Length: 425
Ligand code: PMP
Image (cartoon, rainbow, N blue to C red):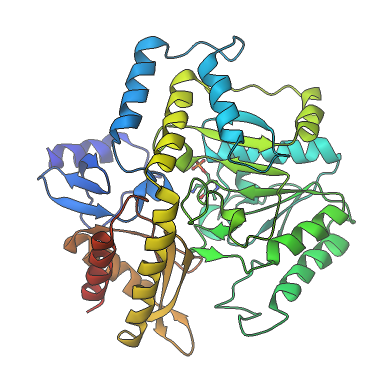
């Protein structure tokens, strides 16, 4: 029962594994875009396991691929050949620009980031990595790149990792209406390289649309210019697609958002790649991959046959069900309706995002933009009571993240907006 589960959770589970909501929620079942609690109450899942369940919960095709593979071969080792592994590698790489032709499978986003960082350092023979303040790239060895103070408070910054100001067209200091906004933010990378790294850079990492920072799309043209500056200083460039990838943002990859031919040197993936099954990947060029073979790197579970079968089915579902287009169209619709609510509610400071990766920033005062942290918490709780699950994000914890499965319908989008409207009232 609920009470027993709560008691056991408090007794046995590490307190750092947080529980959400005043009255914690118990979830017993998931189907498509819905979750069900122990009393059978249905919730619209507008967070999708934190940008993971892109294809919907318990998708029959993915469930079948998983169970079929479990019945055939669960695990051996990547030291042997396996068709599932190589066929999926080929299929995944087909979704990317041609030069990104080599993949290393891991189990999570943090592992992907750590490996990508090590590849940058090995390939360039430089040490310094640059990431954006407010960005999130993982825990463990990748934690230094996570420049969001919530997640690293008592721990020291990773050695050889520098943070640069993240573009924020809403909060500034350089704002959307400044025609030189992008150049000003990019200049800060330039200055950091000159003053903080002796001009030698191993790599730069960014989420094209920042997730944990609060659904902030990097301004158009920023990444292209940032990559130029970093490459000029000898570094290579990583797009962290852990949250953005697999159709979430209305394109297959977040870095494709500006349609300007941007090509990262390394891409990290996790979350949506396995629709809930632990899987991650680092994709790069042959040249960068080959340089890394002078180090020993091994991963016991990465690339296990079940994960490969799941990944394979996820790509099929995304294509067969036109999920990328749905994310694009419904994302635009949802963002439009949420933006319209600004006429009615002064607490909505900013609505932003791409596809079904939307952030709604709540403020006490629209002019001063003072973060409305308590309002955000209250709305989160109210929305749960009204049947919609979301999550809080942003460096001030005043952003509601709306990231439902990509299979939602127009009616679901309307429901999210109606519930948000009512929750504010
Ligand atoms: N990168 C990004 C952009 C993320 O959002 C996350 C997780 N929130 C990670 C990396 C780390 O992924 P994981 O939790 O699977 O280690």
